[in-house]
Length: 421
Ligand code: HEM
Image (cartoon, rainbow, N blue to C red; front, side, top):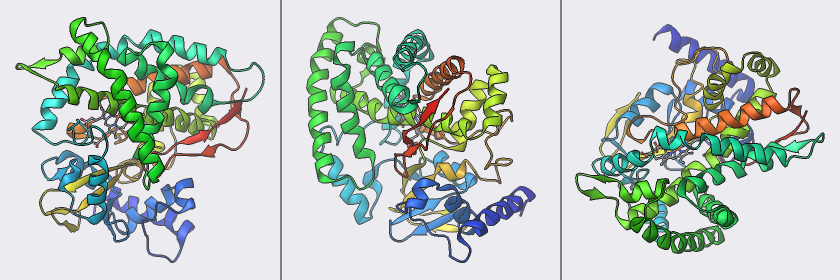
């Protein structure tokens, strides 16, 4: 065993000792203590059983960095297509998906090569650094307007004032949705995104189906208009995206627009909230950042690692394979705990500490390999603008109450973050 790994096990074991002395490590993400703070649970699992079989959830749970990386890099063995999974739970999810509008359509997120390669190269063409950079001025303006609306002097909630509204406005802008339609767009977006939560009630599934149908009805005539008369927005670029004569089909285009809502909203909201909370709870780091604002991009990467907005990804084994010391059978599901991998002491020095100065190894908060987050540059840009503006306008910002935790074990975030300054 190498020294880093030995040190990792020692650190994780001491965290484990403090928190759950005699029990064998288990994966129960529905425990309130898990939602409040999953990291001691992850440390225990990583130390005892880094590729862990959860019988209750019918998945393998991977908490070590090396094995998480191995799964994400090997898209041939570890598929993103739910239809590969054989467990009754996965099959029920698959049926649920097929019953939703456009549920059967392949998107970048749920497909494997070669379909993934074709779709990704088409959307990559529209989602360029130029498209993202072109949004900088708009994001700054919208952030400024949202901050202007914050009552002077008193405490305010970072989540409702800024972190929740901004990402949906930005995606609406990206898709060319006029400002007057934003409220409807936000409602559709929230209802559709709610189905990414585990154990969604039937009423939620139906609300999401209605929202998707309404959104499709809204987008259809927009797309028809843009086909005839392209404008300078992402939807027009997608309509035009061509590769060796191939375009995105009409259904693929709609499914992609909807995917952007699901993939880009709550995640970015949670990055802004989690990053701000981590800084407020580590005043030394906040001060370091105030002293050297050029550390901001690094601070955002550190916050992504330290309290990852996307905590888990799922893959399905196409064929049997070894993972760490375990054998995964074809058809089995593998949950990659990004939040755990991002605190693996075998990869990161002092992983349980937020450190905005240190140059870290690459984290997994945006995934890795062929499915690496398409929106990473946009999410980074939004976080940079928002955190920069908050620190500039409030030179002595501090917590003004206990934040309320929202989110789920997959999407980690806050419902409220009261601050004053
Ligand atoms: C902090 C914010 C964000 C985080 C933490 C995040 C995280 C991730 C992760 C972990 C994946 C990999 C999924 C997988 O491998 O199965 C992913 C994929 C993706 N993300 Fe993000 N994301 C964020 C923001 C955004 C934004 C703003 C957009 C778009 C507007 C976006 C669009 C996408 C898309 C389209 C994919 C699928 C890419 C593919 O499968 O090829 N994300 N994201």
